[in-house]
Length: 280
Image (cartoon, rainbow, N blue to C red; front, side):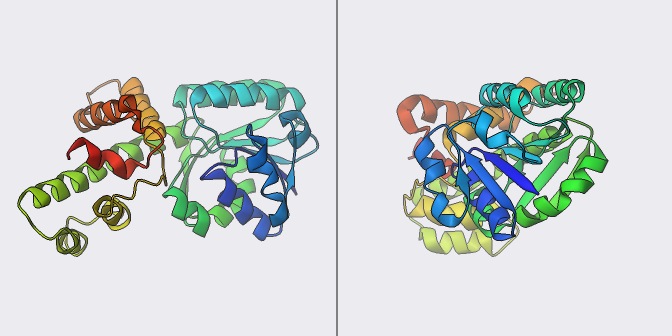
């Protein structure tokens, strides 16, 4: 089975390499060419163009930045991929766009899945991501062995767009969790508490969360290195606000305002744990 992988950034690179380690033939492309060619010493083949990377492959994965990037990449993939190829977008993107790409793919003879992930860079490196998938179930079952090389929790969520809806719901939960950790540590600092001990309290009791366990220490140590960029999380929060119809997601709206301010102040390329900068 020949695989093409488009997008070799913080998440895409280790995900593609996990497929290579599992014995699959992996071809990669990245808009910044050096990020693809740097992977050749890992046994994958880098390509100069989308046209080159998708020709004659069976499965095409994409994980890029924004919905506009997804749309642009798919326009190229639809031109050059062989018929009956399965195209899987793992970007956190617009559910509306996912549905449109599924329909266009059907018309052109392709099978399209939306399969965003959560778990951060560590999950991508360790192959422990949570993957949520929308599209035809028979196609999901066909590529499930590939998903299992990248994640330990893989859920088929329903028809096209359902994977993206699930990811946005997940991001809403993260918004509350990461803001909660930042506010707890900021309050503790104001009251002159030992922050390491405070984090032990949080992670040792009912207030614990993945965000506390993985980003809490980074907040304390002022480590803003990105496991997930502020600019990309802000994109996700904006998508939630765009897609919510019957209610107003108040927590998301509040956290979106915080990240929007940080992004406008030049912090977009920092990790999401840099939300602490808003409070201090």
